[in-house]
Amino acid sequence: MIKSNTNGGTNGYDFLFDRANGYAVRFCVGGACNSYTPVPTDSWHHIAVTFDGKEINVYVDGAKTGNLTQPGPAIDTSGSPLNIGNGIAQDRPFQGIYDEIRIFNRALKQDEIKYQMSRGTRDIVSVEPKYKLVSTWSAIKNEY
Image (cartoon, rainbow, N blue to C red; front, top):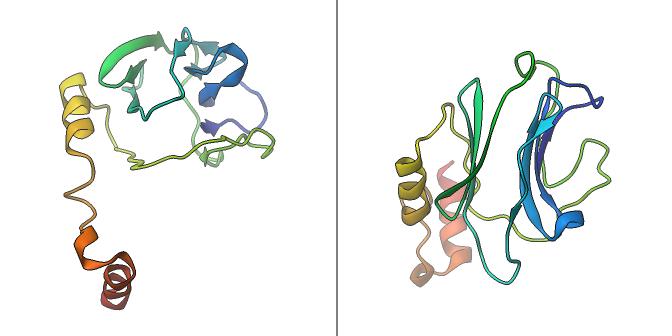
């Protein structure tokens, strides 16, 4: 799902939805991976990953399902692009829908993740269905 590692080295990271292991999420950093967390494919799920510089935590629907301590050097983000929905070589496209993607500049705690999960994006995106989507987006576009 998210990848930053251009040459298969040990200083990037992968957060992926692995179809080879029965549709599961996992996180890898520095060449090490956490255990697979099975995710049913017949409904929406809230998936969150936090990294505080040392430990990676994976949450599915607000519950902590895995963690991993970074085994090696710091993650190098200086020259690697962040890919969402595909691998670096664009050869592993995610077959599904992403919704309400958010990236924070710090590691959230579990209670903060649950809060974000419950509130959605209603405070971030102010599109109300009753105002007709096309008209609302036109008004937003014209403002900016």
